[in-house]
Image (tube, rainbow, N blue to C red; front, side, top):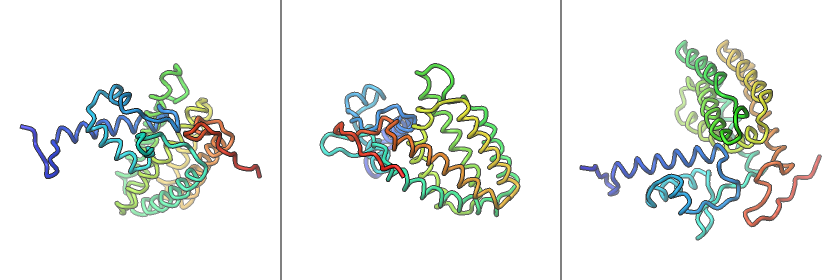
Amino acid sequence: MVAIDSSGRSAVGRTVAAQIYDQLKTDLLAGAFTPGAALLTRELLARYGCGISPLREALARLVGEGFLAASGHRGVRVPVPSLADLDELYRIRILLECEALGLAMEHGDDVWEANALAACHRLERAALPGAGPEDERGARTASWEERHRAFHLALVAAAPAPRLLRLVEQMMQQTERYRALRLLQSPSEKLVRDVTAEHRALLDATVARDPAATQLLRDHLTRTWRFVADLVERGKTPGNKTPDGKTQPKKPKR
């Protein structure tokens, strides 16, 4: 017998909706959909092999979290990258993550250190997003981003502030939409390896409880922020057009 909760939904139904949510979110973060594109229900049903109810539940959740944008009676669209959105996300992420890192260094133990070291090792071993056939780039980007997020979360995991850590993870996932643009548009090995060196330096400073670690984190995140902002500003992402096909006005040069 299938269990039914107080809302009348079965446990199986909730599981399917959660699976579709995870799959669709992974595709969004990996840049599988063109920014500004409408996501048609019939195409999503075929892509994920699910029913309409779990799909609607997954879409509603993603709209609520900002990964998709409601488009009136036309359904949902993939958000278009914008400098204003990018700037807000990175400002918030930097403030929250630096605060969490400071708390983690204050309260972390040897188990926390070991987990951070392991996460860094896994990230360094991840296949480079730009390596291999182009049709595998999205999957490689998704895999690299998963390990990258795990590393950053491991650094701050010892912070005794559950709500702060939840907010940090939310901001990480929001900025991943823009990080995917960086990796998909500029997937050179040198670029990724330079970032890897930054991660190792950040890990070493964090484990050593060096107060400079928070500044290293701030600098690390700011470099990505500036790089992606430049891509968006110069129109080198698919998101330089509005949903109606008009070109977005470019930010004046300073």
